[in-house]
Structures are given as C-alpha cells and as structure tokens.
Length: 160
Image (cartoon, rainbow, N blue to C red; front, side, top):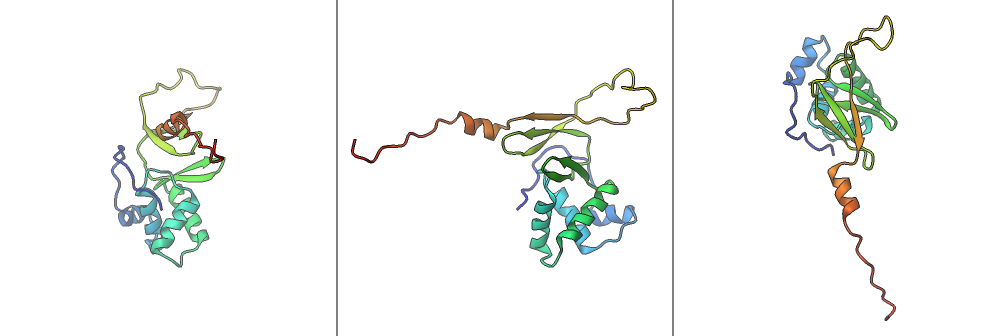
C-alpha cells in the first residue's frame, strides 16, 4: 500500500478529471485512478507500487496499462518521472523542489527548494540553462536511529 502524503508544501493542482481534460486527454477510469494514486503520496512510487495500489481499486487493470498511462501523464506534465538505478519512480509534486534519497532504505523525500543562483556563465558555449535539479544522499532519521540503537545481547541457554 502506498502511504498518503504528508504535510509537505505542494503546488495546488486541479482535480484529476479537470487536469486530464485541460491537456486534451481522454478521461478513462484507469488514467484518473493512476493520477490520483501518484498525487496522493509523497513516497515517489515505482510502477509496481502504483500498479499494486491501482489494482486494489480496478482489479482488472494490467501492468502495461499502468505503465503506458504513467508515461503519458509524465509526458503531459501531470506527474514527474524520476529515473533511478532501481527503475522509474513517479512524483506527483509539481512544485519546484529537490530530493533527499536515503542510501540505506531507498526512501526519497521532497526538500523545499532554496534559491540557488544559476552559474554566471553557461557550462559550455551554446548552452542555455532552463532548470536545475539538486539531489541529496545520506541516511534518513529512521535509519540513523536504527543504526544507533544498541543491539540486544543474546543470553546463553547452555546453563552457564
């Protein structure tokens, strides 16, 4: 099950039906549910996680349908696609933000974007910077607490 989003700042978004119609996309049941599922969480779900959640509501939907619709929604700018070594993940938060990835558990967290000045000169002649992305890597609070917790000592049951 995909956890619901937390209280992180997100850009206001139109209801799924309006958002799809505004882009000229057909309002199909699977497409609407897929968009709702991705927008309802801040966990940046994989295709498999979205598929599992959508199947709870639409048992006959196929993995191919979920995958094609996720790619379509990303191409239309209704969700963001994140390519990671483990595969694609999707982000329903369209507000400018950066990400923190826990190297222990793999959880991806939204980080509010701070003002970052673009470089004074393009990195190479002929290039124009239109946007940027900052990625942070480390260990989340839960993983740090688990690592710092003392390991319980096992008692020997051999009578000593």
